[in-house]
Amino acid sequence: MVINRPWLPLNALRAFDAVGQHLSFTAGAQALHVSQSALSRHVISLEELLGKKLLERRPQQLVLTEAGAMLLPVVRKCFDRLEQALNTIRDGEPSGRTLRVHMPPSLFNHLALPLLRDFRKEFPDILIDVSSAHVTGLPPTELDIAVVYDRPNVDDTITDLLWMVRVTPVCAPEIAEAAAGLTLAAFIAANELLHVKLDGQPRGLLWTNFLRQCGVADGGEKGLAFDTALSAVQYAMAGGGVALADVDMFADELRDGRLAAPFQQVFEEGYGYYLKIHAEDLADPVVSIFRSWLIGRFQGMARAAG
Image (tube, rainbow, N blue to C red; front, top):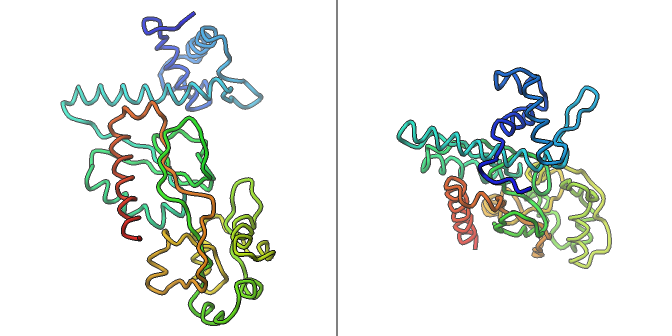
């Protein structure tokens, strides 16, 4: 049976949205000001309509099934848009819209803060709820738009490349001065290496790949590991060791001498920063505005760096 518009079970979808948000029938019922039994009946009727379980009841825990995890963000997004449209019509002007944005911690703290400030000046009616998590790729949260650090891949999102990460060894100026005349292999052997942790990858992956491209056989595993590239570079600037730094992200520090790059080798590390949105959100004017604005700003930054 095809579920078309006249048969959309709106009350059941509202019930599922409330339960799914809180992962609790009690909290969902309180949010909608209905009885828990009525809420449960609506969710059961939706499951019967779909022929799939949406929620799994475990001891002391309620979890979304695969079908529930697929449906919940769509339902939430649809209700959010209805809410925004109704408030705009009622008030006669656009209401404040909250855009849920994710950015990796290093990008967010090092580059994105002034960008977000500038965006808010241009578009004060668009509120932004920013999340930042130590993950490679998309985080497991509900978002409108995300900047992710990842390898090139194909998925069901609309993806725009902001830039590919190009790295070179960086350190405090005094460490670079002491390295004068050393080969890269000798420099690596003499200094502490600073790593950035990647989900599901060996701690020395990025250094090992870089050294292999430079013809250095080993030495990429030793040293300290950090959650973010920003932390590793800050530790390097303090004289604590040598980090692999994105020459575009840390261009200012290299230009003004707070960081030194003692060798000429610069290689793409295989990861990049990508802007991702769901295809159905292309029609959302707020998502479209933020996407176009952010791409334009990063293109301008790339031209300035070049």
